[in-house]
Image 1 (cartoon, helix red, strand yellow):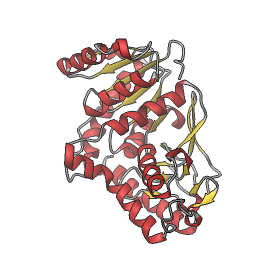
Image 2: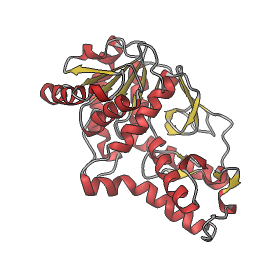
Image 3: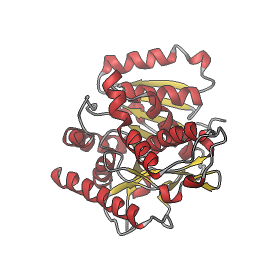
Image 4: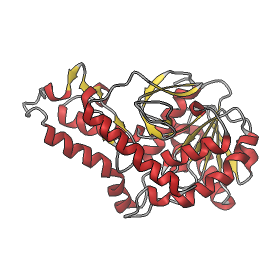
Length: 317
């Protein structure tokens, strides 16, 4: 893709996820300038140096960074990955208390140096932190949102595409709700090409999908992060790629539909909670598509997701 003239992305947090976001953004040419910020000076300087050493091979993007918040000055997009990481066996919501404190301290400082940026929260639990972030900054909901279920949706489409015998880009299905244990697939609107998913006949002679099989796939997708964390300690490559893709939608004013998580206002009866729903992502930020419809079962699951997050949010007040 062509770089957006003089566009600047700052990635906050130089851990496995933040470094992967910066790496993916450089390789994909997501922004003209990429900055990496972390309070751990030695770590962030080493990551910036390592990324800069590959500058010959990453096109015209450049990388800078350090432990001073001024590295974020003038950013068009700020992606926040800083926080305690999820340990094996730990749920995203168990991280909430620690990471809420980090966000509350950091966001006002970032807003001071990058007042016009769109803020994308990747740190978990991202939905709860988005509500806190919006309250702390006072930004309109479209300008501070979470990466939400963009990665979960990619995981889902990959699994469905493998089984259906088509490319992932031909699978139109979303994971919605919490980025976590109460997330669920929006099966009632899922298609392969234009064909409803249960009607699809795989070209390789495999049987059609059953509801039981789709339920099992949904569980696999929901628990995928736990499996990766168990094996290697963190999920980083795919979240790096999906975050870079969100950045491109913002900087390129692309109006792409993505399941990001904004603080909802009267969306299917949900208010004041951030949940992932199909949203239009552009230079203005993210706007939920209000016409999105759910089956009766899905609506119950959506409200269950909202209730679960409300409980976590209340515990942090």
